[in-house]
Image (cartoon, rainbow, N blue to C red; front, side, top):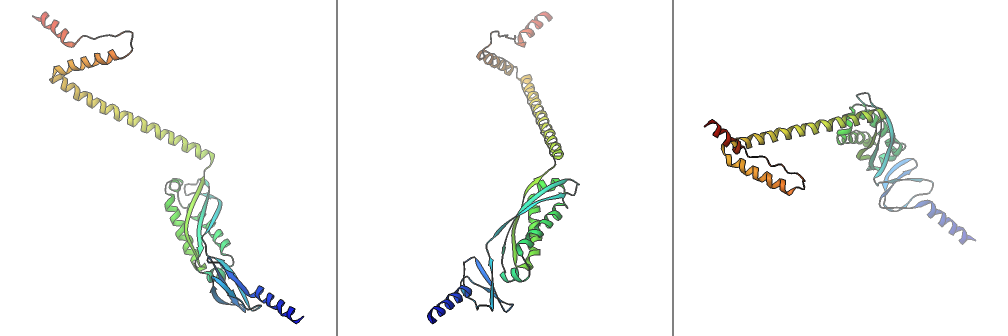
Length: 247
């Protein structure tokens, strides 16, 4: 009977005092309410009733920030969500200095996202997202540092625009494409006119080049599948008749 009682005491002792921590875990030990520091990884032995341990995960946490309704600097109502990557670098601070560092970081990220995005125009939010991500990361990292939390990266995932704004932006993009097409066409016409002017000057100084161009045109026309072919007379023939008339 005594051996059974001792065996039960040993089992209860190990169940209440022995802890095994993984490589990515640390245990913050409290002894009679006073923090003794972070222990682990590996095997830990606690004094029953006197010691208490809180596990802290040191791996990087991926936290989704719910979509936030935000009014941008140019008074456009948008819905923005983001994702945050952070991890605990000081387990003692993460347990002692804040009640729940996960919830605190999430709430802080929501308010910071609304504050930062509300200070920029819509065009800046869409075109300079890297700058905004870096600014969010700096602000969150500075404010979570006293909690022993390191924010390594912040990414704005999606920006939802009102239907009216989407239609206006689509019309603006279409008008911009039409403008570029007209500019390109005008530049092509201008370059072509310059080349034609240079060709006309060369033909004016060298009449034989006009004959060669005439023969080339006839050759190109002969290769086409046309039922009717019109062959224009060279200009020199008309010049021959005009010279005879004058004489």
